[in-house]
Length: 284
Image (cartoon, rainbow, N blue to C red; front, side, top):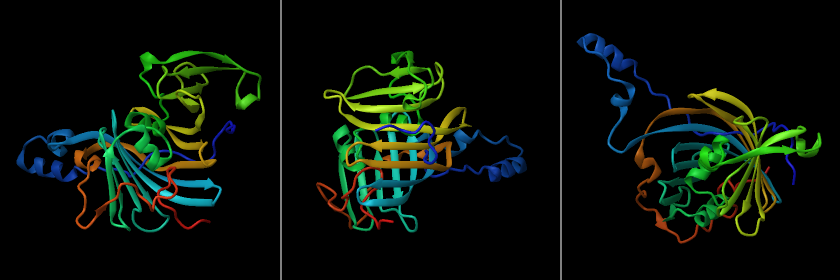
């Protein structure tokens, strides 16, 4: 399946974090003391630096279209929290990983799942076999390996082929459980397209396209993300409506406590449609 040269609709990110420190400035002015840096004033044991963003999304598959909202928080290198909301109402699915353990909560059903973070466990929930670092790379439009490990070379192609210019830079990560290959217009430029394949068989997992890059927090972020997920022939579009913005967040949001009255399930039976949309919802 081929992706359009320019993606016109999805993006990145999850809920916006605004740190308000005006009160501290006022109080420090009254006392004659200099206000402490925001990191010192708002840090607490277990807190961490990270980013939050808010997306609106749409899933298109064999059963129709579903719209949703997604709040995302991530703290590199591998802590992630995703909250999925219907167009109106509270969260229907919460997925949080501290890098080693993943917790999934279905608030409406009052059930939860807690298991080791592995590609297999994440695929069960999201439809993509990506753990923390790789998932963060997907949402931020970055290669899924360190810059010093990527291989980059010029890839030539006929104009109009796969939306390519006459030549593009190809970015490839070392062989792993998932094969990653991306294209950019220039060396070191924004990733425009990427493909994920199974490490052994080479079977297609997903194709991703990025668009609408903006400068934020000293980095460039794609505000539109389009994913063609091979399993189930599903298309997921994400458009960032807020963020990503940097901030300090409590570490426990990535390892949430289980609310009273929630029952453990070995599998989330009501999660009938993995793939960045959560449990099944009314179709359009």
